[in-house]
Length: 218
Image (cartoon, rainbow, N blue to C red; front, top):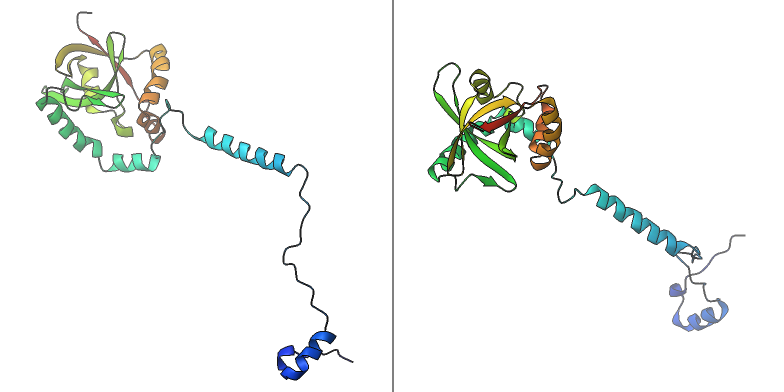
């Protein structure tokens, strides 16, 4: 025989009181059963939070460590020859302002390098980031990560005599390729100051030359 529970709401009002007396109160249903907390729960929680915080801190770059730009972005910039067009504007502004505008970009300093064309014999000027190293000026022939050397470096290999404008000063210089020892010392520091070089190194098969410019007469 099947038990049948008659719903209270279907009874006439006169019988509901009797129904309430004969029907026991339903037990409250507990959706979530209570659990006994683990005796070490608070220690485990603090340990989890501490590990997560340490991972987040270790993932952040140090204040003195700049992040390398995305390689896809560098390849796109190289493909559209962006640096070629920006260098035209940079050169004009640098010259017109006497080096007051365009000389500094944060920690990176810029100069104008004037070389002699190896084929045309004409003077060619390009803006470049430079890094002082004692009494010399260090520039990098990165060419935006392209697989060919920049024209200014090819000109210097043909004729190492050149001229630089640093701010409002014009200095005659002689160029040479950094030695192996100099390269090993300078390259990590160059990449630290300008993280684009670290990206360029990854998107080209060319060994990127580090060039030392020494003032003539020194």
